[in-house]
Length: 253
Image 1 (spheres, rainbow, N blue to C red):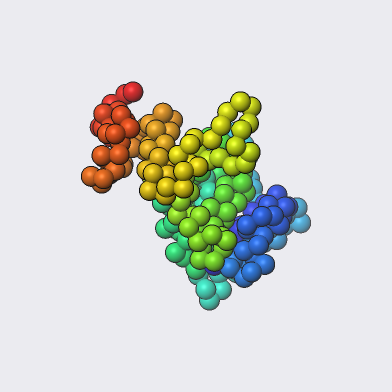
Image 2 (cartoon, rainbow, N blue to C red; image 1 turned 90 degrees about the vertical axis):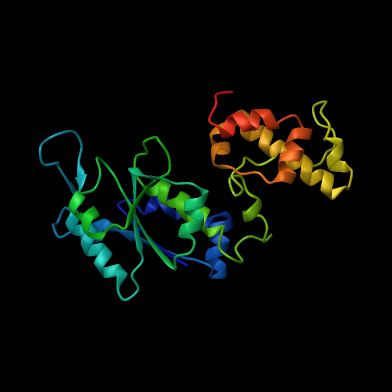
């Protein structure tokens, strides 16, 4: 899979691309990542890539011409899906990551300042994505979020094939608590069921703990969740099912 990132500040992305899973995925050839400095496609001696907005207002707007010239040159004979990282975009989540992992090439345009000239967006952008309801200085960190979250879903990237499928949000629930050595820390032990060696009991315990955490911290996720009859029985045994039903119906806890 190939990622192309269009940015005014490519230096912001050099370090994250040299670390951890993304770095190993690049070395192994699972992904390619190319950074493109939008200023390289400007035509004036000051490399101007932004200007004042028509109609007045604060800040600057990214110009359409250098963005379009950059995009048209790098696309070549292999067009990719063009994504603009912007606060007004569709909310990004794990399901969006899974969908985008099916593309061979993603072209990520990092928005800046007061936004991008709307004419570029209408002519060239396939979709707009936001990583959350808050404002960043620019789209570079958001682009890196997409690269990281999508890369880990690609076959062969993670050492354990099940890791991505068991992550938080992969099943619409928060992940259960985890424990490792030592068995005692700060006066606290490890739940006995995790030391039992009974895989069925452990799986049931972890499922109920995932639901318990989701109920406490993100009950909104349960509105989209369907539970099998076997899962409902486990939740009833754990005393969670009435509260889960309320959350599924959108009732306040």
